[in-house]
Structure formats: structure tokens, C-alpha cells
Image (cartoon, rainbow, N blue to C red; front, side, top):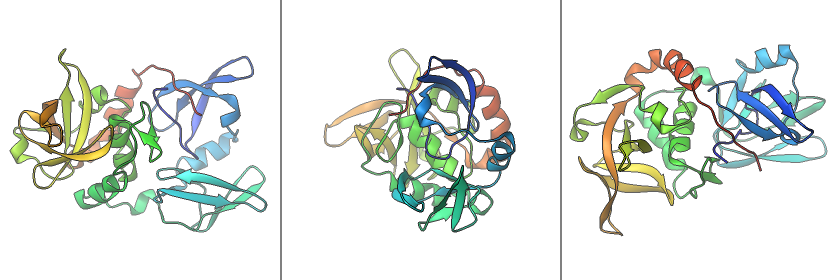
Length: 260
């Protein structure tokens, strides 16, 4: 598994393989992969178009949406299509959502909101390809935090690094900036969100907070550097240009992912 679709996220069907597998393209970041067909619900073309602009995000770590005779658990970042502030309709079912939600047009894209959302994921277990509090990886954490803050991001760290404006020195970074880290081959493989007091929030074993300096991430418990810093990027300052650049970058992404 290299990624996940969360409840309410839209996807376009590209190909079917037998009765079990469907190749899809995620509508908001263009990520392509395979999902189990029984994890999808069809919508009409008019619903697809409407749900792309009329929805809200759940800000609850875990919550349930209630139908007349059953309920469905959802996680933070799930989309509530056609939500009117109290309920929404999918197929023949009306669902009620009583938790905290935010509409995209009401999102505050400031660094304070970025840090507030990021800290909600603290201690979530690491899961390769994960995008939820049940399990999340480093670029998935960045993508979800900034998605909930109204800033579209690609799925992979090596694509995310091309967005935003470079910060010359880590000492000049601001809370809400993103630090990118490289492996021994020089490939961008990790990322995290800069916090005050020279700290970084990232997914490594679990979503955690460690120290950061010009060398990289220093793990106090292990008394060693775990990730080598490559560059720090400021995303919020260039948010107006981000969607077009994201679309061009993610169109190049290929991969497979499964839902369980």
C-alpha cells in the first residue's frame, strides 16, 4: 500500500480488472492506483461535479456519521459531500454529522492553524502509505495537514519539495514551514513541519516532535541524527500559485495503492 482514499474523497475510474480491482485517479491530487471495487460508491456526473465544490472536512480525529439504521466511522480529513452543516446525502441515505467540520471557504491558511491541525496527529502510528490518524507516513502527514489548511499538495515528498519558496537557513525558518530530508543517495525521502523553538513534527515510528538544526533531525532519546536536512520550503507565502504547480507535478505520479 502506498496511499489511501479517505471517506468522501472523489476518484475517477480508469480501468477495471475482474470484479475485485479498479484503477482510479484521485480527483484532487491526480494520484493513480488500484483499489478494491467494494470500497467505492458510484456517483452521477452531476454529483461528481457538485461534490468537488460543495463539501466540508471533518476535523474530528474519529467520529461517526449516522444514517437511519446504521453508522459509518470516519477520520479527520474525510470529506462530507454536499454537507449543509448538519447532514448530507449519498445514494438513498441521509447521513448526520455532529462533529467539528470546516468548509474550504472558511479555512484560515495561517501558520497557527497549520500547527493546530498538525498537532492533532501527534502519536498517530507510522503506516507506509497511510493518510489517517489510524496510520500515516511522513508525506501523507504533510499532504493531509496542508489539505485541511486549504493548500493542495502532491502525495510524495520528492514532489512536494518543488513547491513553495526556499528558506536559506533553517535558523530563518518559521513555524509552518516544511523541512525536507534526503537519504544517502541524495533522494528526498522524508519531510516534517517546522515548530517553534527549533523543533520539527514528523512521522517516524509515530508522529513525534524532535529537534532540528542545519544538520537535520536530532533524536534526543537515541542521541543521534536520524534524518539529513536538504532544504526548508515556505508554502503559505506562495499558496496562490500552488494548485497549478501541484496539478502539473502529480500528473507525472504513477503507483498502486490499496484500501483495507
